[in-house]
Length: 464
Image (cartoon, rainbow, N blue to C red; front, side, top):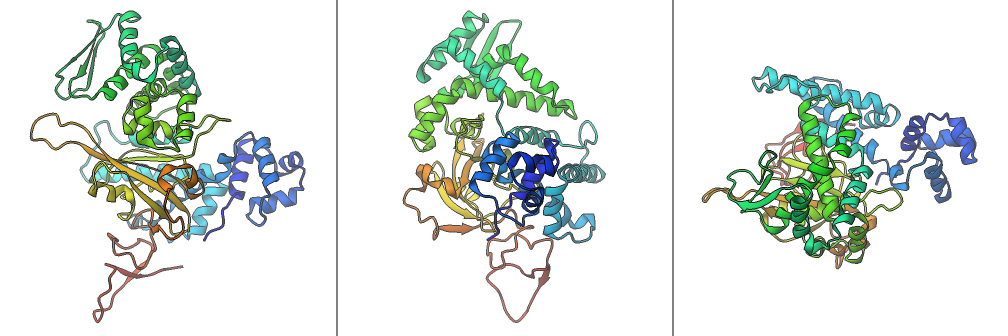
């Protein structure tokens, strides 16, 4: 099992703070040589020194987990392993060193790789509508939310101000929102057939129409989104302005995402929701029932409880369709999502499709020994027309195994024996005996023997 690495995170945070080793060591009360050993993973960190580091660098303990470096490292490994690049083999240790010691250079490498992917698609005849971009808009939007830990204090404050004025409990919120739209904004809210649309706002006619196919909790969210659009746009505009986005499309996606965030903060106020989450031990279905929201809305809100000094449990959040396409993703728990290609077929995210509407639980262990408590459930939306398949996704969450005792889904599980080995994706996974493997890892050489047939679909030699 890989020993947790903190030195590279300390080095990155020190560099971002503009401190020399000598300056940081002096503030910590240790020698510069000892700090140098820590940053090069040659000395451990005591609990008291860890607390001093967090205080001196003005971060909380979660920021010292190294999740940012791990995510960079995973992205680099994927890029370097792409056989179409024809690059020399780059050992994992070198990718880890680059991510730790030169994070800006690592991000530049990934930006170039993404640009190359887009250019390759263009050359193959899959031209994007507005030309080539360095970043695909959806990837830039995901990076925007991930880099800010999916938490926006300005929007929390805006939502809390609106909620205080409404003065409504969870199960009175829909009526209160409709009344605010009517009284403050002179909007008439109607429910009627809308075809493919779920919400239709006509500023000239002062009308807001909601699709009759929407369930009650979704109607509430759409009204909360409308209130956010009318009252929180200045706060959203300020966040977008400082983001220096590369395209209007990315700006549009991020703007909608920030309005969705504000709507969720309005329906699920930070402090009451966090307290309820702790009281209910993060039982998502119970939380959804208490606040009158959908299962997916409760999941997303749990993943955004990142307020400094009052953080919730660090969860990752993922939404995926039956084809494996990821439409939402946030790694608050430090789970190293693969940015490109599919994920492990043994992961509960994919097996949950076999048992609709049931919460499936899995103790997932990565090849390096890191383990997560994962839980997943399908969510289904109504079809637009008779005969069309209902859109179905799996919503999944997870946290590090050390937090399992705070989550109701871990009850009755043997935290050691019930583990299921998974990988980031088949092309990066080195498990030799996996029967679910879709294709061999890119970095290793296939071997075969016509005299025997193995249970695993591919056999290969691990190249070191």
